[in-house]
Length: 165
Image 1: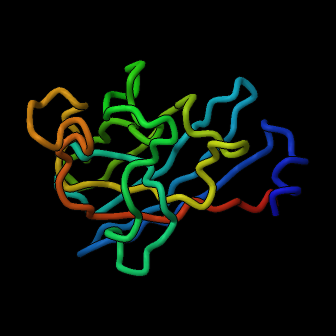
Image 2: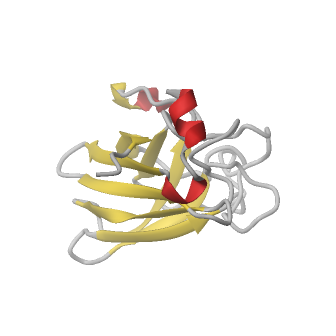
């Protein structure tokens, strides 16, 4: 599989994650590798409480115990938790998404630290939506510098290669 990923041009590489979680949280996300090296994440998640929800890439693509088995945030460079625009942040720190009054979050994020190929690829890892907002490492809580004090994991999905057809 690694050989196949390496042969595709970065502009053609796509991945998908089907989100499921407790209660009625569900959705899907598409990850598109851009020619500048960034990855664009777009999609829709429904069944969320209205408001802000932390949105992260976690290290493991393991959902055997639901979203709790996805491990910590994806952090290959061993940095503190932060905001997506911070120099010091986990690669998987994607900030917050917003669910409207109907519980639907429309997602459109571009990020340079979540490639679909190479040594720090997010393929095979998981995307996780949390119950609470991410304090972006600035909350002063004991969990701010590790998780953003983001609360329970309410939805997740494993990131896998998407068919080009």
